[in-house]
Length: 220
Image (tube, rainbow, N blue to C red; front, side):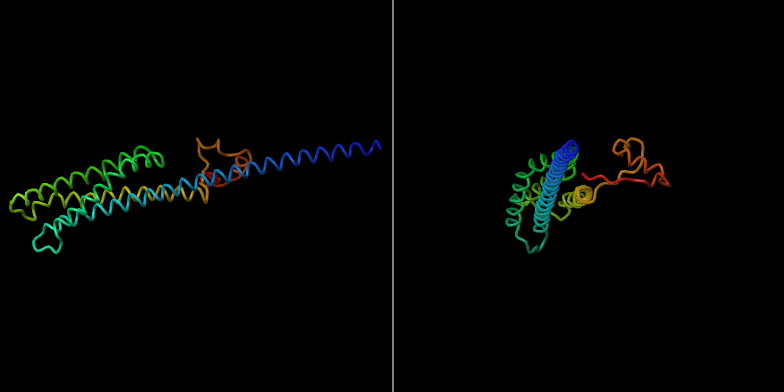
């Protein structure tokens, strides 16, 4: 009987310890799953934001181009129709602008919101004022020339380049985050990041040659 007691106690302790470890493992997995779901939701929000900015930018830019084209001699576009379409796009863009600023600051950083203001919105507004000035002159009976719109066209051409760079950088940020979530990020063996290395990782690094090529992968 005395010999059975240690066996029963050992089995009981093993069962309790095993159950505790299993619960901890399950909880850790559940937390990791919830964290990954949160990251994926943030990534999806960023994708939708980029698509929305890109679409609304293209709609307003094209509407402005159409107004300029409608002012050209023998244009097949009707000025009043082009103006109505353009002003409708201005309302849509301005209505979404504050949302863009807030969402950019949340999803990326404050600098991205400032960049949208300076690189996209301000050139839009300036080009719009140039176009409206020519339209007013035409309605007042003044004779206008294609050269009167050269400044507005130049602004739109420049805007096309800056907006492309802005959207390209947003897309790059999205791609980097997506890779980090689904593939993990590489942390090369460097000063300043060694705290992310476990003891086992540091031991492996001792035997890595060359050491500057050694890295570990961490998920988001």
